[in-house]
Image (cartoon, rainbow, N blue to C red; front, side):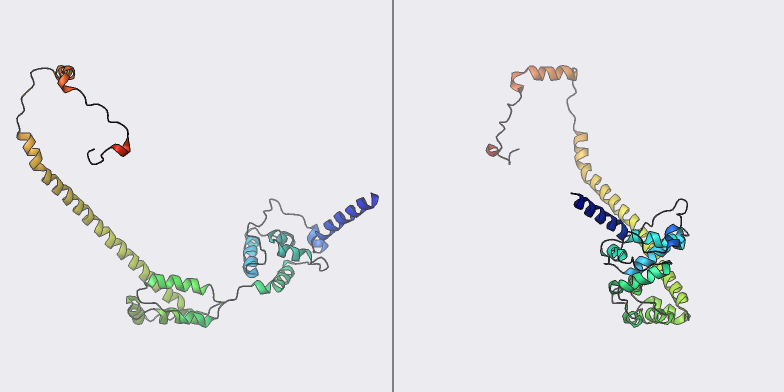
Length: 275
């Protein structure tokens, strides 16, 4: 019995030893800043790109001006599953700076890194027939994120050569001859805003026409009902010489004016064409 208790104590002691952080004494002894906030980012579990995880983590550090020692100690809280198990295996390797920890992290999970496309891939983008300039630029921005550090020359050539010659914007570019990527992007953005404004103005002009058509239909409908109204308006009924209440009471007492009996509630026996 005593041997089992000693074995349990050894397992528990080993567990706590294994969960110690692989940092230097200076990092471990550094006190937490006042009102420290843990990183509110998605945990990394070896599935996504490790470089994106590090970028998000660094942004959090910069936002709250987190010291180097606290950056090291808070990093394992953003790991999950296999990534956390990897971190626990770093016990024999004391780490003193976050740069060392980031370098070890990237080296180990380099296989999970998302492969970026070469810059020349952007040059294959062209505005398709029937595709608006706005749709082409949306596609360009999406594909640009998949490129690793595209140069200004590639960005300029992609937009300049990718816009269709039939596009009105191509004529403006040919006349102005922009020489810098940002200048070209500003002109394209300005042209897209003009197009959106013109579309909004055209749609606003169509609304009064719809209301006018509805008004004409309502007027025509009232004209169609006028003969019937005129017919009943010209008909002279015999005026009553008694109170309407007394007339109704007399009708109620008259046996010839009895109410019809209720219909039997048997749906399958009823003639739906008569009711």
